[in-house]
Length: 199
Image (cartoon, rainbow, N blue to C red; front, side):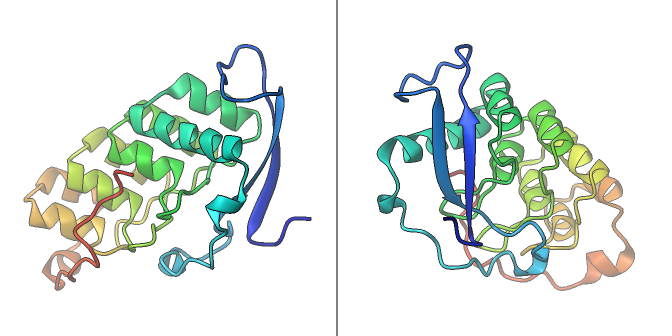
């Protein structure tokens, strides 16, 4: 039986998906996910994580393929898996969701498709970084627009998306983010790490 912090889901694998590493047409995947109703501000405080070494090797390989698909923008593969039951808010060991990895890599259309499938635009990773903040950091205007249109909060995360846009002098993004005078004059906090969600 699955605990509250572990999601059990079954994916029926069709012949049209090239899952060469799997030995059957169905796979029960146990993977820890953040609670859907968690507050964005608390997302950096991740619950204790399941030891990945306790999972079957093919399960870990499958999850890794999904994260890789998000990074490289493999829409057909990733969206087919999600439409077959893969949780759209699946996170890796660093707290980065599929949407975080997709947005940070600049895949605007895949970002929109994930958002249409109820991906949470306001999840923070384990370093307290926001999805929209990462998109601003990389300067992906279309990704930022897609996130804003889906309710991404530009005032969460460290630093916030608005603060990042101000740092890089992106007045166009400040307009898209709906920045106010108080947002821009606020002190910019020191990020917990210089690392960004590239993995």
